Length: 202
Image 1 (cartoon, rainbow, N blue to C red):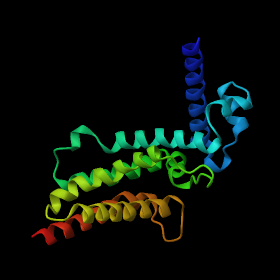
Image 2 (image 1 turned 180 degrees about the horizontal axis):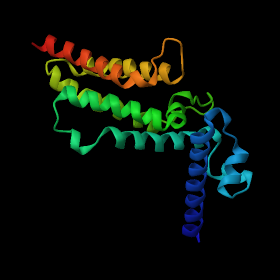
Image 3 (image 1 turned 60 degrees about the horizontal axis):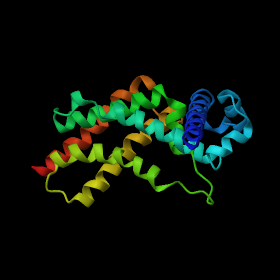
Image 4 (image 1 turned 30 degrees about the horizontal axis):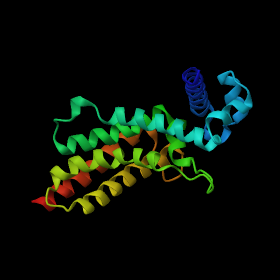
């Protein structure tokens, strides 16, 4: 009996996550409502709170799925044997294309701030680390003598540079780039940073 109950709970959880994901993808995080999600999932409003403590926890699970999809986009097997600069360029272009194709889900990764009473769990914070790891790997080849702690900082800096350009451009800020130039400028930015790293190695 307990096994059947858990199976039904996991089924409801999956339906709620998918319903919330579809709502965010279509309407954005700001328009997410518990009543809409449960209606889409085919359950009563109270059903959401038998699986998740609150709406914020449900969003964390949606963001977790988004991170997994982003990781799959950025860790393509066919790119692993390419030169480090090319791998960094591929990462930047993959990140940009994911943001463009899944704009609302991507934005939700950075717009969701759980209440202080329910902070982001450590397991979800750890899921973000792959972003730094996939950048640090080619950086280690460009600058093998750099201490690991400095490399981690450099990976965060490079991510911040690419993310910043992508974010302000997709938001249509006045300093943002038109979409038709964005991919090229992101590529140039990464190549410039990588070239500087190679010069310092030499």
